[in-house]
Image (cartoon, rainbow over all chains, first blue to last red):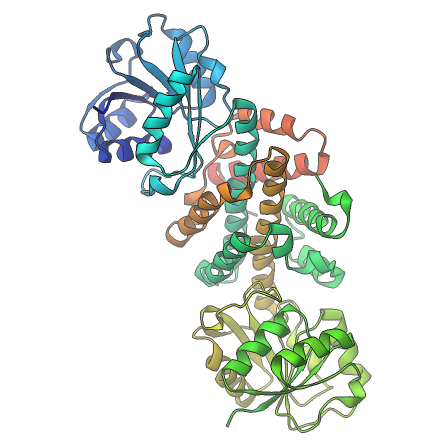
Length: 264
Length: 264
C-alpha cells in the first residue's frame, strides 16, 4: 500500500514532486508552508489539507518530505521536538547533509532529484536521475522503493559526493541558463528574437551527449582568435562584469584545451 | 544549374558546409587550405581537387566560399590581385564585416550559419538559421537562392548586427559548453559519470524554448542562498578562477532577477 505523505514546502520542487507522487497513486495528506497562500495553492492542486503552522502538522503519516530552503530545514526540525519516531523523514536538497536529521528524528534520509523545477512546467520524473541516502540499510531500502516508483534511475550516493553533484548542476544548469539570459539581452537590443538561437543551443547539448564537452568545444576562445575576442569585448565595454565573465571563460576554454593548466 | 564552388578553408565549418552543398547537388571543384593535409582530407571527402597554394586556385568557379580564421581571410584577399570579377565571393564569419571584400573583388557578401560545427559530426543544415548580406540587391538575391537550397531559415542581417549575433552565440554556445566541461571535471573527480547530468542539461534547454531564460532561472543564486553558495565556493577553494566565475555568474543571476541593475 502506498504510504501517506506530508509535504513540507510548497516551492517548485515540492510542487512537481507532489504532483508526480499523487499521479503515481500516493496519498498526499497535507502541505505545510510558512506562506499560507503557497500552502493553500499547492494543497488545492493536490486535493489535500494545508497549514502554515508547524503545530498543526498532520500526525501519523508514513513519510514527511521536506523541500525547503536549506536554512529553513534546520530551523523547522528544531522548532518541534515531538516528531513521530515511526515515520520516515526525507529532504530533497543537494547540498544539505543527511545528518541534519540526526538526533532529531529516528528514521531519515535524502531523495535528491537532479533536475531544474519550475512551478508551472511539468517534468517527466521517469527520466530524472534520483540520488538517495538512508540512515540505515532498512531505511535506504524504503527510500529506494519510494524513489523507484517515480524514476527509473535511482542511485545511492553519500552526502559528501552529493555536494559535488549539486555544484556540477549549478554550473551545467543554473549558470548556463544565465548565459542564455545574457544572450537574450544582447539579441533583444538588436531586435533579434531569441528563438533564432535555439537550434544552436540544442545542438550544443546534443554534442555533449556524444562527445566529451572538451571535444565538443568550438569558438573564438578555443582558437584564441584575439581579433574576434577583442572586438567582442569592445561590444560590451560598458558592462565590466560581463567583460570579466567573458575573459575568465575564454581563458578557461583556451587552457582546458591546450595544456594541463586548464584542469581546475 | 547549380554553380561550381571553390572552398577556401578546410576546418569544421568548411567541412560541414562543403558536405551539405555536395549532398544538395552543388559541384565543389576545389578545396584550398594553407595546410596541405587538411585540404587533401576534405577534398577526398568531397571528391574534388585540393591545393595549398593560392596561385593554383581554380579559375572560372561561380562561387568562392571563404571559411577561414578572420585574420587569414584578409591576408588571403590581399595576397592575390587578379580575383575573377564575375564570381561571387562569400565568407561565413560572424564577426567579420562584409566590407573586408571591398576594393578587392566586385561581387561579394556573407553567409553566416548560426551553428557549432565539429569535423566529425554531421549537422542538418535545414534547421540552421542562416544570416546573409550582399554587396548589391542582385548579389543578395543570388546568396539567398544559394542559402535557401540548404536552409529553411534565411534572414538578411547587416554586419553590425551580425557581430552582436555572434557575441550572443559565444555566450549561449561556447561558454555554456565550457561550463559543461567544468561540470564534467567536478563529476570525474567524484567518479560520477557525466551522463547523469544530461537529463538536467536537456531540460534546461527545453525550458528556454517555452519560457524566457529569466523566467526559467533556478538555483541557489536566484534565492541568494548564502549557505549553499559559500559551501560551494569552499568546494572549489583551490581554483580561484573558477571561484571568480562562480561569484560573477551568481551575482549576475541575482541582479537580473531582482532589480533593474541586472541589465547588462
